[in-house]
Amino acid sequence: MEFTSNWTKEDNYKYRSLIKEHKSIDEIISIMGLDKLKYKPNGSYSYGGILKNFGQFLNEIKYTEKWTEINLQIHKSKYFNGDNYEFYFKTDSENDYVFEFVYYNEIVGPFIGYNLYNLSFTTKKQKELSDKIIDNNIKTNTYEKITDLNESHEIFKRLIYLFKHFHNYYGKIQKAIYVIGETTNPQKINYYKNSIKSSFDNVVEIKGKSSINLGNDVYYYEIL
Image 1 (cartoon, helix red, strand yellow):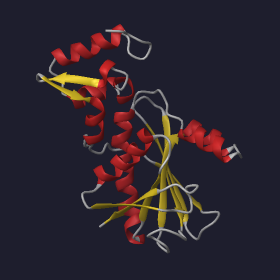
Image 2: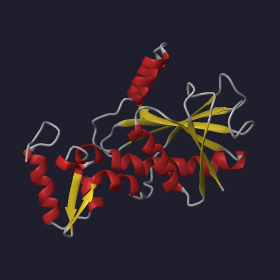
Image 3: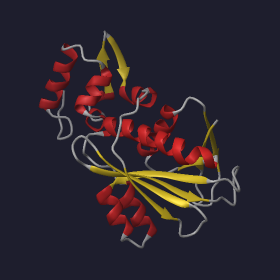
């Protein structure tokens, strides 16, 4: 096996040790982190004598919520008659993140006139940096940059908790529709999509046009 800086001999030894301890794949992900495991050579894992593909597993995995202490900041939208919600939270490693629900109304697509919330999350540091940038492309790239903090598994669980909290306390009464824009980063899009689909059973996904995503398609989510 050829080792790299992203998957070292020590990483491989740790992974093999966890397999020998009969840890479940969910436990292995929790211990080693999704961002680490994606660099495993050949992108697969062996468990119970069955060889499976990590990429397929990560798309199919179901997450449960993790209680999260919230620092909620609510701001009036600059452009629409509604509020933006910023959920600041910490991970077990004391890293700071923010999960944002940005309000807007649509003029194209299947949900004209509805209360829409564009979803996004990033580290607190990256948000603060992007807020100071004027150029939209640089601003977006700064905000969407993937970290190497190896805590994706935990973040998924916390996003589910935060999404449920927002919908139950704010979104449901507004009959809100949630929006995720297509980007060049499918990994982060899947974060958003899976957090929504894992939060509620009765989720309807519709792909359509939007005025907010530079001409690209978006995914609309309605909770029935």
